[in-house]
Amino acid sequence: MTKPTILTFESYDDWDVEPLEAAYKVYNLPYEGKVSDLPADAITEVEAFAFRGHGVLGADIINAFPKLGMIANYGVGYDTIDVDHASSRGVRVTNTPDVLTDDVADLVIGMIIAQSRGIVGASNWVHSGNWARNGAFPLQSKVSGKRFGIVGLGRIGRAVAERLQPFGGDVYYYSRTKKDAPQWTHCTDIVSMAEKVDVLVITVSGGPETAGLIGAETLTALGPQGLLVNASRGTTVDEAALLDALETGTIRSAALDVYDNEPHIDPRFLTLDNVLLQPHQSSGTVETRKIMGQLQRDNLAAYFAGKPLLTPVN
Image (cartoon, rainbow, N blue to C red):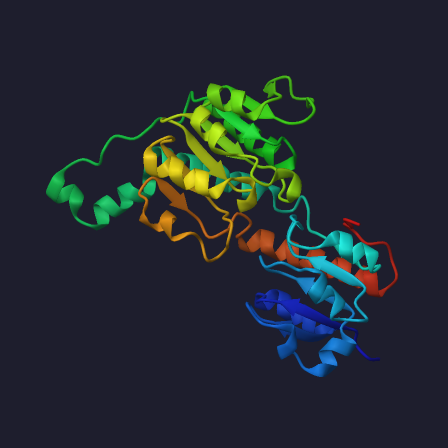
């Protein structure tokens, strides 16, 4: 029996490549590759995308494949996919929710501790010989007992809040509606919440509705001792305002896993010693990536079998 044909984007681990190639005829579009570079057969044969990457999957790519009927996204966020256009073409879209919640929340906590306590700088202090030559590492900031603000109390935001409880501080959250979470304080305004907290964590989804949600006014409200942590999408923060705030001391520091122009981030970040930079690796564990790949393949299998999709977004 002839295998269905799919197009994968960027690179996959061997544990994903082998089952994909066993089930499908696979073409691949590498990082920064162009559709025009693909063989002509790929354009006419591809029926589904296994999308993995941080680039934009827009109408131009969707329209290039006349038989395309399904986009299986590898990740929970799908703001880089033009879902509205896919829907207008009758193309189904799926994602991989829930499976990466714990990893993202774990990394957020790790970044809060690492940046507050200067763990990366302290390690460099030892490696460079500064400890022996110049004595103790400069004093850092305590985590326990701090006031934490979470922008968005969805699955990931709630998981972060739960992990913060043992630190003994107050937890505030911003959301459009009050959640069933009486142990935490609901706020209806981000700026006023930022004034109350020491650490501001962003966990909202990306997309037009949250673009630039955190701007200069919020950063000023967070203040010169404040820490901003972003593990959502780079678009949720006014990046120019954030860079200005870090350079001028409007806020003390930031810990970031996401940026506007990944992986080609603004070079101003690289000159700063008050920002912890991560390479968008919040779901980057072997265990979770294997589960994500399996759910992506399960959605593909359901589509080709004519069965209900497991995690549809349109």
